[in-house]
Image 1 (cartoon, rainbow, N blue to C red):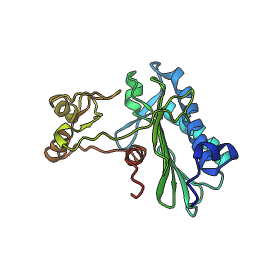
Image 2: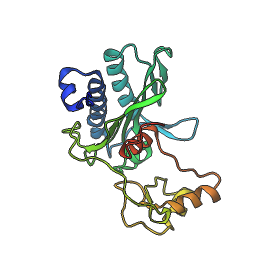
Image 3: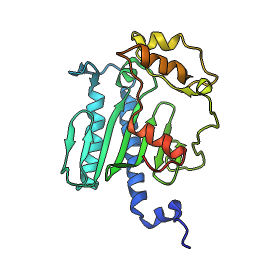
Length: 242
């Protein structure tokens, strides 16, 4: 019986899965390097039609990512947050790019911002990378190979694997919340009982029951996870099917 190939070995042989993973980390790391000189500086910004902010840094990072993807993966379409669709929709592969997640945090001088990049193949996410350049962190996952935490200096490091806890009670479960300090979500979340552990950015982690209460009673508030976050969670659980 043939065992599953060790990705850390096949990667050195130019395995296409590794090449995509290496490219994704390189794109995200480069975005962080480009963004950091602008952090806590005055940058041009404007309000988009949906009411959210976009800055010159968003556009700079997106342009950098698009330039590299179009050069190195010319046959792959791209869905980018600021500029929309690029390339042929006929391909089974698609890159999904959020060049500067948490733009408002970036503009406020808070560290909870970074880049999210996902590769989707045949409608299923195959790999995803999330970065937070200020604390020098990467969280990433690849379908069938687990989820990990690493750093920008060694993004492919697999020594810290992400796993879900053995918690089975909603009252003991923790989630991280993100909300603007003037929003209704912030006011509700800040009055919930703090969890034992806190997230690295945004609001302290809160009991999941409180989040469910927020969704139920605050019709205009919602709690969501981006595709990379959801995928990373699934891989941490070793759940392969959507």
